[in-house]
Structure formats: C-alpha cells, structure tokens
Image (cartoon, rainbow, N blue to C red; front, side, top):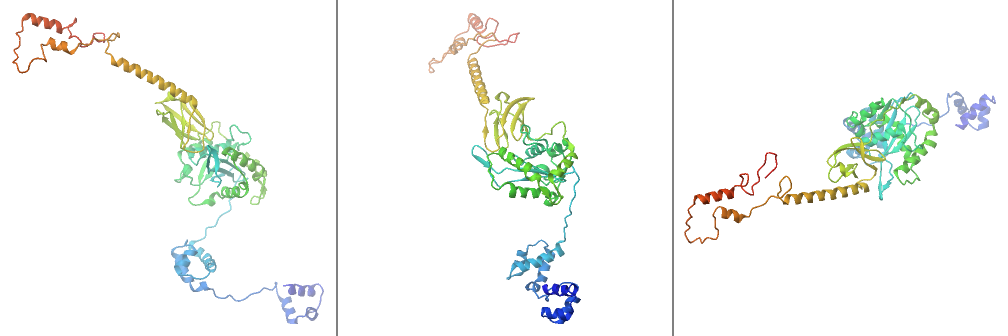
Length: 463
C-alpha cells in the first residue's frame, strides 16, 4: 500500500518518469506501470478454500427447513458434528434467514406528548421493609417517547391496584413529598406489555380501563412476546442496573425512591441522547406542554376490598392483617390500601388507619382497637351472665317469681301412694261427692287454672 501511494506521488507531484521511479524505489518498471494504471489501492486476494461445513450443509438445510428456530448446538448434535462449533454457527447464521424469514425493525419517530412506555423492573437487591424482613420489590418505570424523559418509583407489589397507584404517583407526584414531583400532565397513550394485572389476556383489565378512562387517554398493549414494541423503557431498565444500582445501599423503599428520584433529576434526565440528537432537558418542556392536563378527580387506585368484619376484627390486604374498630363487627367495611396507608371506612367514616407494611404475614394492631375489644368483651360477658341468671327463675311479666308446687302434692291430689306394699291387693276407696268437690277445689286455681300452670292473660302476660 505504501509503495503504491509513493509511486503515484512521485509520478503526479514530482513528475518523474516511470524509469526514474523504478530506479529510486528499486522496483521493476512493470510494477510502476501497474500501480499507475490501477483505479484503486491494491488488495490481497486469494481463492476461497472449502470448509468442513460444506459436507454437512445439505443436512443443515433440511433441519432448518423443518425447524427454522433450531439452535446451532442442537443441529450439531443431530448431524453428529465433531469439529469446532464456531464455523458451524457461522454457517447456520447465514442459512437461517432463508428459512425463518427476516423481521426488520423500523425506527419510530414520536411526536411531543404522544406516548409514554411503562414497564416493571425488579432490581436484584433486597430492600429492608421493616421487622428484619428484606424483599425484592418491583419498580415502575415510565419513559416518554419524544423526549426520553424517565421517571421511576418502587411499589409494594405487582398487583393491579399497586401498579395503578404507582402510575398516578409518577403523573401527579408524591402527595406529601415535594422532592418527588410528578409530570403534572399525561401523554395521550400509555404503552404496556402483557402484564397480567394490566392486560394479560390481550385486553385491558377493568381496573386499568377505568384508570385510563378517568385520565382520558388510550392504553396500548404490546403484541405477545414482542419486547421491542416498548424498547425505550426496556433499555432504561438496563441503564438502571449499570448506572444507578452499583455501589448504592438502601435502608427502606422510601430511601430507594428518594435516591432514584434524585439520580434521575440530576443525572439520567440531563444527558445527551444520540438517537434524538438533543438533551432530554431540551426536549422535555416541549413534550410536557403537548400532553393533556390531569383530571380534576383522581382515578381509583390502590388495593380495594369490601368485606363483612368478622369477630377477630381484622382485614387482610396483601398477605397482612390490619385491625379495625371492633364495634364494626358484623358490618360491611371498605378497605383501600395505597403505597403508604391502609384505610378502612364504614359508610364514609374512618374506622381504621394504618401505615402500610410492605412485607408479608404480619399482624398490625391499633392499641385503641384492642382496648375497645376488651371493653366490648367485658360488656358481653356481663350481659350474658345477667341473662343466665334471669333464665334460672320463672317469673311473671311484672318480675315476681312463679311458685312451683312440689311433686308429692300431686301424688296426694290424685291418691297415689308409692309406698304401698305391692304384694297386698289394693282396693281403691270409694269416691264420695265430698271428695270430688275437694279435689276440684284443689285442682282449680283462683281463675280456674291448675295451680303452678302458667296461662297467658288478655294483656299478653302470664299467670
């Protein structure tokens, strides 16, 4: 290459003859002539030699024709390949598009305020959630298509209510922490994959449909097994793991959200993006201005349930039990669990309010509820004892006791003697008119009823 360039320089710039150039460089005149006659620099070429794969290529083609996605390692096993896998993989890579087809990926251009892509990222770092428990929790990430502006927040679970609560927090901001502001507006379309709580069956779940309906935007579900449909946010997940996680320690989910919010604001959302040819901060105001305003009424988010309060006065939300005012036992209560609080209401009145626990299998009890349960239990025991004492005595409606006649009185009344000698024949005494009158007077009470027998009176009482 150097000789070719020098020959052309001497001939064109120094205006030397071919013979002079050959003498100066110590080469033949034919070499100089070929260099001056060529249109381009010289290249080394040699005829292609055969490859070991050539002998088995027909068998490889037969396998790919029937199984276009068969891995090269499996092909090597089927054809009994005993040589280097590298040359076989190279040949399979060249042949596979002929049978599998080519799936080109278009580059999509987004307009301001058009779309935002959403996804769940599971950072491989256990987060302390309290009571000595650590969990790997999901992080909801949202990336705008036009400006590439990204926001993220850690949520308690991947259930639908928690995902929607996370989306609302990214859009509207943290209700009490001004350091975590939201977008303040919403794109016209939200893109999700087939997340089971959002649209696992190919259509939005009722909760997701209600959420986007309240916002007045469209929910777009990606085709099945097509992660490239939302490649923007997918690449941001990898960016989190390589640029945000390393070297960081988190003490709680709130600490995680504080750190990632600060990192996104000061680092990730200020960089230059080559694909758009601009910085995110330059495009974000234009992108945000084109979005629609948030609705005046917040959508329904969080985990929700309506249950009849049982005797143990606890409700279960996300595998945890929370106490409720025991005076609500037997009544229906409405439970709403957000990322921070668990609230229980009955007909609009709050009957329980707890900080939400992000672990599982825990029992959260309000001491006031325990005190109320103790008082209600004591009142119940006292009422039950009084009721038992009242049922031990037979009484009239006015409270005085009913006299109970002894059983021997009935024996004497009917002339029965259980002590009579059973061997002696018993001869009944003749019943005279005076005896019948005496028995009739003894049998009838003052009002004509048998003594000791309670009969209802005309006022509904007993006598």
